[in-house]
Length: 221
Ligand code: SAM
Image 1 (cartoon, rainbow, N blue to C red):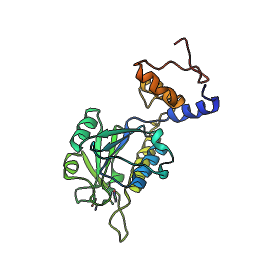
Image 2: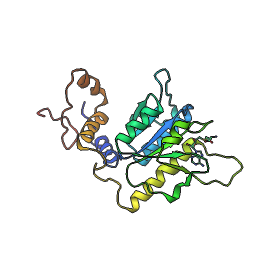
Image 3: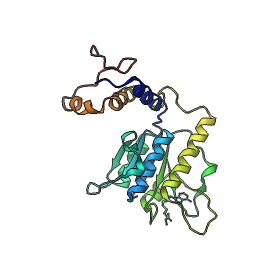
Image 4: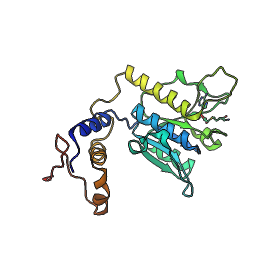
């Protein structure tokens, strides 16, 4: 059945503002409510991909805190920290590691208007040595309380919305899908509009059909 026009317009308006060059890399965060809250923030900020370090035998679990945002943000799994770093650097991302050590800089001093990946660490231990040593910059969010750190999902929100704030000032927030490459945009528009058809197209190795202005499938394409 064709996607309803209102639903299609809503999907398009969200996809039009999605940003591929702003992301997070989450290392060893294990609590479902934290993973879920990070993902929900990614969706709210317009982040297109969220990266996780997740060995094959580990399973990431999301709960109701996510409010279904795992459907709207692509989850990219990396088997190890080194594989994640390699992949993100190859794509041109600058890695901003969050850590509370003395080399870290106040997050408000830095610029996040081009390829930015915020690297977030485990609830108990923070970032691994590998990541601390390999990130391009170490940043922290200044705090004045008795407790030494923020909840990881809260830190993710502060940082992502700082990046959005900076990009808004520079007029860099996409309005018409320019935050994604055109093929990615077209494919995702189809997948969000017709999730029930994804498997059959993928199984047969077929490219997705084009969609008409009103969201109907263009059977001539
Ligand atoms: N003892 C750990 C440490 O020293 O990093 C605390 C980990 S904290 C609960 C979990 C994650 O939240 C951190 O790895 C970091 O990603 C993020 N985080 C917490 N407080 C932060 C702050 N003030 N600035 C930046 N990131 C923070």
